[in-house]
Image 1 (cartoon, rainbow, N blue to C red):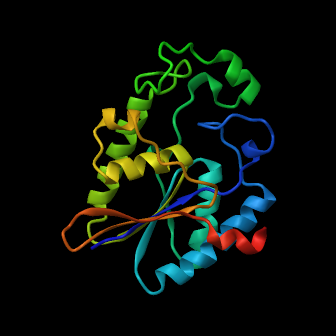
Image 2: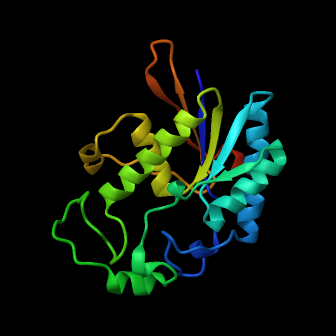
Length: 209
């Protein structure tokens, strides 16, 4: 049975400089690089001699995290745009203040899977379908390989939903919230059920605090 290890990218400039997330392309901070090194050392212990293929979102905060992991594990990084965070359209490159003032009005008070937050961006349904299509493609292409995937918080949550075979409407009532540098492990049991074996493990940061 194959394993999929998911890593949320480490601290990025947009976490500290009031820039919006999504497709805003910001690099890791100095702390983020230290976090990524700590994550890579943890992964060395987890992975051992098991073969993995390393994929990453092409946005800087994820790809720079993946480069540090790849250097530690001697793995090449395969970048894939399908692993990006939700497309925030016209808000990309803007501040959080600008994003709050210019998001599209909501028609529902509850989570709306078809809500498009920003002009030229994705709805949550479109985002989920994109992530599912990306993971189907990667999973099929790497039939014999374990996977390491460095991505973003929203994308990581939707990869878990994909693994658990959620229909799009099911994400209206469920969300998997992870943290910077968190490690999640997906596997299968002897009954070929898909399992969340570990979720958002950040114990490796205890020494950084």
